[in-house]
Length: 260
Image (cartoon, rainbow, N blue to C red; front, side):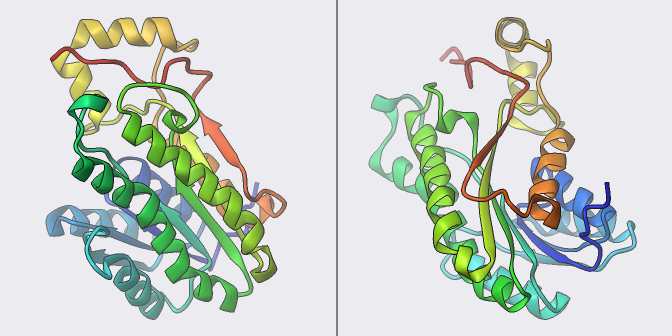
């Protein structure tokens, strides 16, 4: 299927590794120019080189999205370098703290900032560019933790808030021809990712988790998430907005409680 993304410009926060990099790669393979950001210069330069090798224009910005004006700086610099913006992907996320009684108020704030607030800032900064390009699509990478109870309630609450944000913005921004959706992955395995680390540190526990909670007998891959996100960014998804698309292979429990 031709997704009609050739010549478009897509900005992805945290596009240097994992799901974010897989999304940037899929967009580039479809002919889109891409803007990515990351906190580490060496990792960012490596990602930019890999994407540029696909024959599209790439802009990389070293940015901490939790810093003051960091997200806005990324959008402005990318729009200037690439000439327009047609798609946005709020991919950065994470959590701080642990179980509820061990998680401080500061951990809650930091987790909400990295997930919900960063996504809101990206869409707010990018919306005028999307509108001036004739409309576009924004995708927030949420999680099945946003709709299913699991460990780290502050992370689940932040992800649930992202799903609610997309549902609201799907309606509010429709008059500007902007679609907004969330994609909620299940547990995704890739080198250097959190699940790879858990599998290395607790092989028997994670093997049991996969056996009991994954009907397909494995975790997902970044590319499987990226395929769905790229479709939502494309004009082929023109009537999909304000919704949450789950990509989890029918996974049951969203996470596992690790031993202390």
